[in-house]
Length: 173
Image (tube, rainbow, N blue to C red; front, top):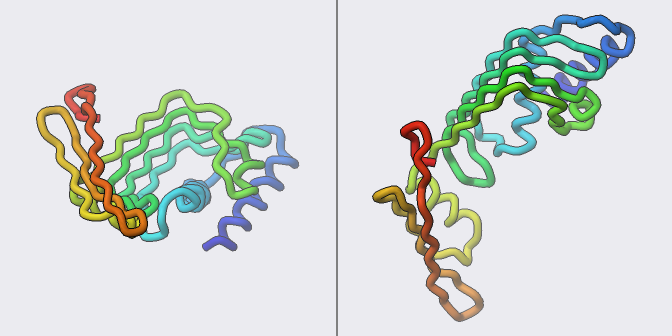
């Protein structure tokens, strides 16, 4: 897949340097580019559904009118969850894409929603380090609490973190 992405980028860059006018780009080519960029940040077991409309090259910029990304599961550093992203008026720097980095030149509006469970967070914490023992995550009454035991050498240290969940548009964040 990496070779296909590199070839797609090379073709898009060569088109952008020879053409100054807006040149339409296939949704399939943009999906490959976006998927490759996402896998730079998310673990390979992540599964993304990507929807693209209105993609075109404008000089050194890839413009996308509407981009919808749904990750089920979206796994980042062992933490499993779901992610939903919707971006309108997106402009990506093609030079950044050639280098394997997603560089956003501009976006009109972006909404990202991530969701996970207490169990998935506990499992992710346990996989993060063998020094984190018995992590527990609780959500209740608009608050969260994370408890665990940290092992340093022969010593054990109990830890606890608490915080408030903010409610926006009837969603806890």
